[in-house]
Image (cartoon, rainbow, N blue to C red; front, side):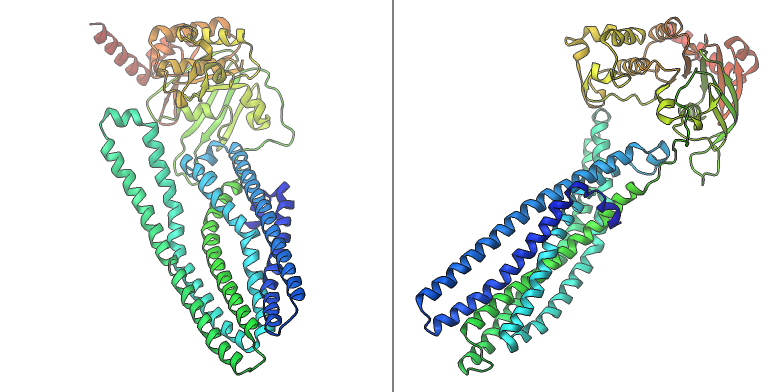
Length: 580
């Protein structure tokens, strides 16, 4: 885990190493300052010349300045290294997510991925900052102080032999008790973020059903749950302070009592300067242990975050390019050969089974079926968003697994059921389909998708800003913009997955008529609930329970398919009722 995360340090290795060097220098200087101070006190007591005392004072001032400079430089390089490490880590996580297939994404919720890129990375960043600075400084200060205390104080340093193990054990137990609560918190962050995301994205539904109070209670419950675990952990960690205070005062009393007596009786060569230095070293040792306990808590917290980050980085994309991929798609001919598919290897039931289908290039194909019969699953196999479990899918006579993935998906444009527009202008959204498209091509695509008319009605036309998620345009307008975006790609295969459900039948008919006139070479697959959207297609596929039950033209299916005829009759009767 550490090795994997360390790869994100990259160009920030030098600042990290410089931090370690300056921290070591600062620790050494700070430990020797009390030693020199004790010597100066002893010389003052012995009646040394003022010039000698001034020299020692100047030397102390220089050492203090050096310590300050080393600390300041270490602080700067540490901040630069930790911030850069976090930047690289977020970049690596995001790039990894971009390689995910739908199957990989299904393993993580969107809120969980956001939490891992924000909260978890922030925890790991803080941990890294502590590791290269405080986690090095505190042990060095502790070791140097104990060694120097023994050199200087001799018998008085035995106080540390008793205090240090007691304090270390106490702080270890405090950290160990607090960690389970910290671990639980991170899992609950995902639920809290999910609650916030659902509320914000579904604000219109919440308002429409007057469920504000329910959402408040739901959020309060999640927030209180996190607060309870944090409070429990912080309550345990709070014992650090009184424990340290007890050890500190015990150390002071022992050194003052025993040291004063030894100084007065002139035992073991102890003098006032040594007594003062021992008190200072006692403070340094105890503060170092205190910092080590806090580092232990933070490292344990960040360990959980690091594990969650590594889960994302370790996830292996289920789809990959072949060794010698085909780099061009000649036409839009599609063939399914004995295809069966299920979403996971452990699934007991196939989502699709025994699919045999051949679609000529340039054909218009309609797919009809009830909800949940795997119509979307069928078309998602074409651009290889998922791989088939059994059988083969071929485009232009070549297995989709033999194509370069980017080339394949560049030749297949999909307009999904959930239409998504990004924050930005209409033009910026359309350019997602083709970044090099000219203004004339954009307008032409929008006219074909019947979107140009309502765009021209906006004051800023194609520079009109789209809010996040496309909330300032209607469902029908959003669908038409997404169709125009797909058309700009000039694909060999165009898939509309129930993407005209929010437009009226007249506009739907105009869009389909435009397809026939302007993109006759493109294979067009239209998934629809309305038979009117597919009745003039070259081929209509009827699906039920993950299988193809009938294939043919509109008139043929009315005779041979009970499912198709039943849907048609229901829609005709509903249409007649609406007219009445």
